[in-house]
Length: 263
Ligand SMILES: Nc1nc(=O)c2c([nH]1)NC[C@@H]1CN(c3ccc(C(=O)N[C@@H](CCC(=O)O)C(=O)O)cc3)CN21
Ligand SMILES: CC(C)C(=O)C(=O)O
Ligand SMILES: [Mg+2]
Image 1: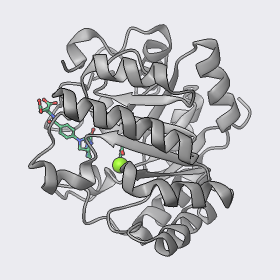
Image 2: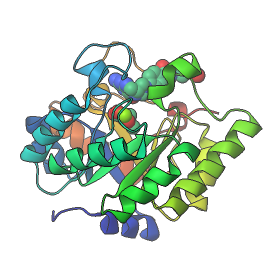
Image 3: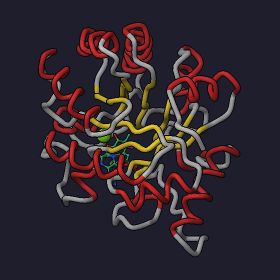
């Protein structure tokens, strides 16, 4: 597989071909994810929970994200690498540009940040400076304290309309991808159809352009299993075959099933 770019993923959306994404944090797994044919690796701030043992993503620092982005970058060649900007690292425009550049120097090909309306200026500024941006809407875990828990978002019609509006605005501001996390499947369909940029879902039903899961969740290693997770190691005899099964299931449209989505 040659290097995956934003253009590659745009073409997948245009052709109606799904692609797959895994959140991972180290070089050895990056190599296995690449070998499975998975297009995108997200260096997620979820590492604060699954690697560091915190109960939210809030304690994760820029230095830690830079370190793990470097680890992923050294472990694979082809996958597009998205680096998460951690909580508090994009509060002002200047800080956002400095921190996004640090993730790019560490090996990211794109940066992701959580939010809509309040980030439009930052999204445009990064895009203008050659930093591709992935936006993230719905259940944005860095706002867990504002939400009062990891709760499905967009269930009432006002909230749903606001998320759809934010999605259109981040695209117009220059975002080249969008993650939708834990929203009703019907809302995800609407947003995916309304946008021309690729939409990656987690707990957002089967009809987004791509799916993402946290590596340790899809290997069944985490104690708490959210509704949107499937353990792909349960019916495979190695990590390698579990990753291939995930990639196949996403591309064939057999994962996620209806039971993994929210209404
Ligand atoms: N291991 C892991 N996997 C993840 O997907 C993940 C992380 N960590 N850390 C950062 C965020 C937190 N995430 C979470 C965590 C829990 C739920 C959860 O338990 N959701 C309930 C839905 C509750 C409702 O109906 O409102 C569920 O039943 O799935 C969802 C997303 C997603 N991200
Ligand atoms: C779950 C995904 C979308 C994420 O942001 C992460 O792994 O940090
Ligand atoms: Mg994240």
